[in-house]
Image 1: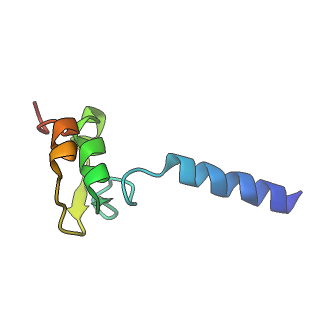
Image 2: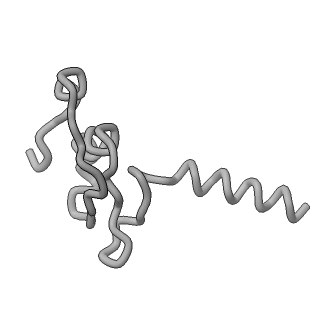
Image 3: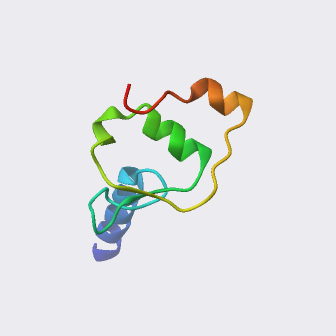
Length: 73
């Protein structure tokens, strides 16, 4: 029973994960590590007032650029 509960909680935490980690709080900012993270942020205006840290150089390909929206507009 305990193992089942732990598996469910672990699966839930992965399902709730945003970007490459973090909670968006000042002491635990969301981590932007990939082009996918940046694209997800660009279309998630509900997160624009959260805290972020860029943890890798992110290079958008021409295909990625088509999906990216300017943040804040």
